[in-house]
Length: 273
Ligand code: ADP
Image (cartoon, rainbow, N blue to C red; front, side, top):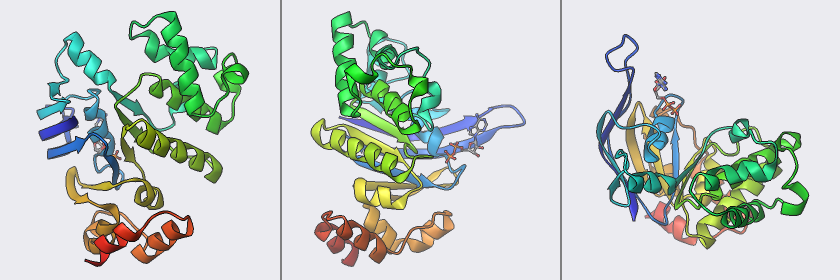
């Protein structure tokens, strides 16, 4: 199972004076079980890339397939496949709109033709996953929660769809360290316990180095690096610098991981080879 991109390019405003190629000739595969970090300077094409993974944007050239299916088709099977790719946008709390937390989380499942019982079950399960008590918060207005709680409601809404692939675009932007930690420990748990494939767009190299097993670096609409994060940090400083990405020295990253009791042995070996 995987998401595959074959010679994918995307151009905004084709045929207008504002024509802009945001992605050029990208071929790659994201396999089930991956935890992929995506970095690149502003305007390098990150958002365009992730919006093509779930069919929000269709390639101008090339093809995107999810588990072997071309998601451009209008068939029910293709729509169902698109539901397997959940997307949490930047500042997802701006997309909350229902009068209660439970109704907001139920929105996605409700559009999937599930029974009321199944919908309620999904809402409860998704709230449990983001550590929001159903009894306490289910009937509250999402707009009266803290910023971190609102974001968790928005993420629960995506989780309730039961995605196989979860795309997160800067999920910790604007949150304090505690809020950040909460979100990332949850994401890591979904990845490990539910075997969800995660695609994380982030500026935070510490988050990427501790969570992702693969790093993709975009520069001027192209993928310039694709590999193990610490190995890239250690060996590709020049290219990263040219791509406008600043990374901490690898020794600092390793110290950071060790300081948190995270396993580094395998990674140190990759870096030293
Ligand atoms: P990133 O997420 O890395 O900041 P984007 O994918 O948002 O990059 O943008 C890539 C390029 O496409 C940028 O040059 C940006 O200005 C351009 N772009 C993004 N969205 C649009 C749009 N809706 N119309 C025209 N150009 C766009």
